[in-house]
Figure (tube, helix red, strand yellow):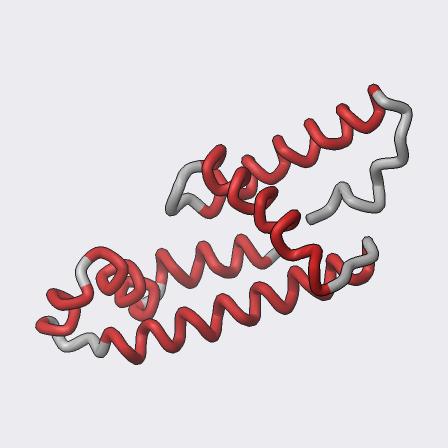
Length: 119
């Protein structure tokens, strides 16, 4: 649901065009009347909302503590690299590939896997 909402927002609204323009060339976007600082602030706010949603889902599915961040970050980085930088759908596909590989590896070892399968 979040991916669909973000995709629609980024590719079908004026704010989405401003995000893309600012990420490509902030100075040029500023010359065209877009305020890059405002766009960066809005993008940070949206990122914090997405992170909050992810943390809520993670909290419902698995145990976590403040030191678990780097381990989860590795999985997220791998998903983005596999899916392609700048592609929301590719990142989703990369995350699914990593999740399936993670579960398959745990099944091969006869270990429980559902606690950590959802990132």
